[in-house]
Length: 374
Image (cartoon, rainbow, N blue to C red; front, side, top):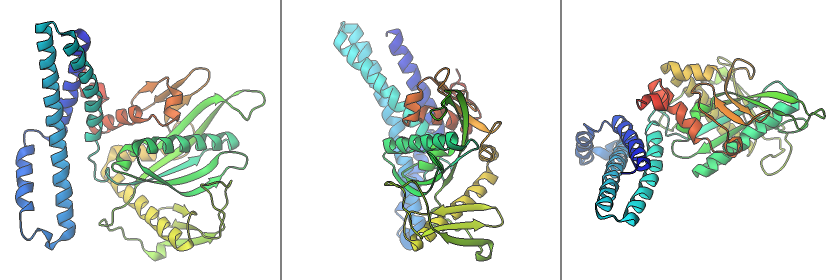
């Protein structure tokens, strides 16, 4: 087997190893048999919520087993084809099998990342909050660039994106924006983005063409499922209605219906300004409950708590990632040391590499290569 094909096989085998670890491949079939036995219980649907959860958990296990076994079988089949092609001197068979292995390597790496999304709320929809830091117009423009980046990323994933609230910058960009992103594992993917993002570039707003550094904070928290009870004492909140303002356009309405909810014990403030006053109140209350739920998740996970605490002041010392456009091109995540020179691709929403490195770090405390034993 040629060296390149051997390397591809090794990559797939490493992904399979990690998939097997996350699946618990030794006990997976026994767990599936237990699920099947419970599904046949005639009293299962006496509790519809519990039954639905059981069916979801069973399907997740079935999907994980099918993915693992499918990749394992495809790997064996293509390795066998290459060996047969080499024995018979059939270059076409060898080339086809090598191409299939490359495709399989991409698939297995993607499934490896998805297997890391097994946290309590990873499968949930998510709220994404962006706030510009100090720096006026330059920082507001950077906030709008980040908003565009995440919208592009979500659209590539096939997720639904709703803008719940937006505050326009005085000259350009945005001061803040809150999005609801709907889709399977939306929170699991985006949770690693919480923190301060730093931009270095030649400012388009500086007539002297000097290099500027800007900061914007990103906060991510899961949309709370209906079956998760979050108590909010009405005496702990203040609800204000006001006239929303923005730069106009398809994403921004100017109405008297905007709603702001302030939660006094935690200082959390949430807003919604895109629909009727009644709808905005409902959206803002859901956002508040999601923030409170995120705080509970943070308490259970020291690592996640550390990441979210870093999403405080948008300034020096708190950044998780740097985007350098001048004097060179580089995006570097400061937690994993993952870096890429494809700044255009990243700002156009190609974030899976950056997110995947952080997911692997969160699970194992190691980089992806370290987790694979390189």
